[in-house]
Image (cartoon, rainbow, N blue to C red):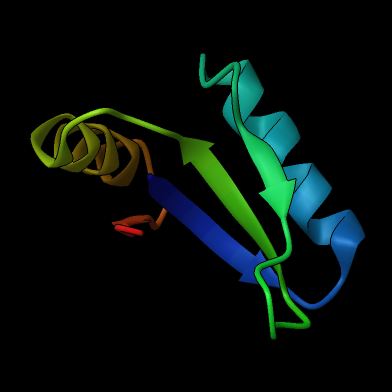
Length: 71
């Protein structure tokens, strides 16, 4: 999955999801991982790491800091 930030305040995570959706990342979502108090933004999920890396690189070119997180 491509992560696009972690926020203490849910409202900030929701703002990022809105921004991502406007950029075409229609499946962007907020999640709270187990044992975490942060609201993490998942920009997209992919079946291969190479597709996720390509998406993260695209986001970075568009000014959104992101990284690939594997399960």
